[in-house]
Image (cartoon, rainbow, N blue to C red; front, side):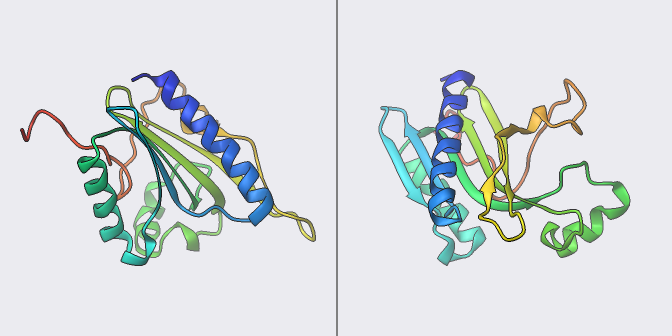
Length: 169
């Protein structure tokens, strides 16, 4: 397992998103996972169960299949800047989708059991009167508002999806 292999999966997912968005105008939330034996799993995100149960089901699948690396793709709202302390409570209460500075993206996040997590995104650009398209792939650590060398750690229901080995057995 390595950062290089995870970045390769993210690049492939980015290419898939570009082709799919060009044809369909949207990206369905999808998981691409690799098991310890090298098997590949492509699984749509089970949105119809609700957010929390869907995440729990994917975690259970990854545990049962001994997944060691995955990439998730899906559309999301984000901010292209750090959240100011005075706006944090309102954002957590209302969500970023209500924020006036929100940006629509295709989120691409990956995790490897040995390396850790990488997050990237492609802005969804919707020009007036023209077909929408995706901007270039940007890794979160490469964004201009993240201080150089800063450690970026994400939290949320779709983060830390890999099974933890060695502590339960």
